[in-house]
Length: 423
Image 1 (cartoon, helix red, strand yellow):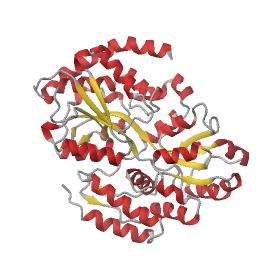
Image 2 (cartoon, one colour; image 1 turned 30 degrees about the vertical axis):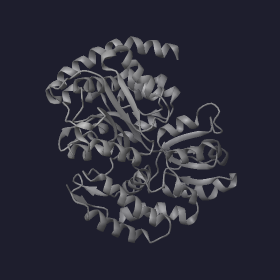
Image 3 (cartoon, rainbow, N blue to C red; image 1 turned 90 degrees about the vertical axis):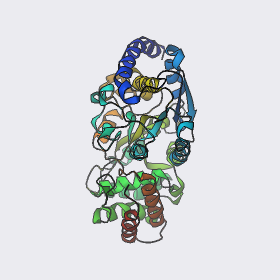
Image 4 (cartoon, rainbow, N blue to C red; image 1 turned 45 degrees about the vertical axis):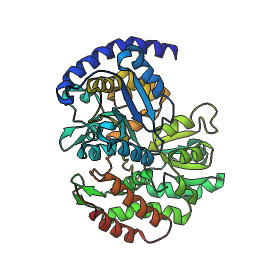
């Protein structure tokens, strides 16, 4: 670790130069307020505890632009609620830079809470291509990609090896192994994040997309969920609970609960973000050395993951917008992006890091993750995304608990999504 830290200190010199260039490019868009000074960065709870050390590097070299980190709950829904409450306070907002879920960008931009940013102020061509789209709204850049993500299927490779089977590529293979193999080893078959919160919306979108369907089109202007593909995706999840290869306990799982169930050796298969692989592979884990990761399965082969992650945005009422732009450039620079992966176990947005042999040896899922990211689809874009997500959560959770059919769920989704105002 010492050589990594030493290299990071050397690279900080380059980062300082880079951020200076970005600040000058961003100045015209960000405005002429007292442009440099201390900042507050707000984020959801840092599950791996890496962000403080990353910001320490900035604070050592930018004493006049020190950053105070504010951590909100690790639940996406709770973080969203607290951010929105604060942003509605206008000039009274205490947050300058916001680390926001990729799917909040459209809503925050439409509400006027975050500033448009200059495309030439940030190295967007160095990022994985799909992540840049998550930072745009109505043709303009409103944030800068910071962390990307794509759901993966984690599996017990030791158990599948004993059974002589490969990790599943299709839903049928997943169901077969979850039913036949998991009980032989005293395990539950499959779980995702099925509590009615944002995680369930992600799991539903992945199932619908994998079956070839969609939920909304035209950036929220058109409801497209009433389809045979959407019914197939929702039925995959509902059938799992009904038949028992998805345990009923999974209906209460968020990311951490599902990760813990897998890490404790209670699951054969788990849909989760890559951080769960890294944490479950750490020394002391009951399943260290026993897990693998592949792309999510679909009806006829690899499925489609939802593009996750977070973007960095500047509050419209930021006290020091130039410093905010410089901080974002620092956090998206290659040396810091490397720390995002090595210290935070989070997928970076810099494409070159996915080809680094040293990183691949340490994080063997990187090639699979890159494929999952570049083939992923975003959640439905909508300036009313919070309402869209709440509708999806409520209706699909109802179907998964046996209250109504998948066909009825799709009809109800179409009706209630259509009732949400477009703008």
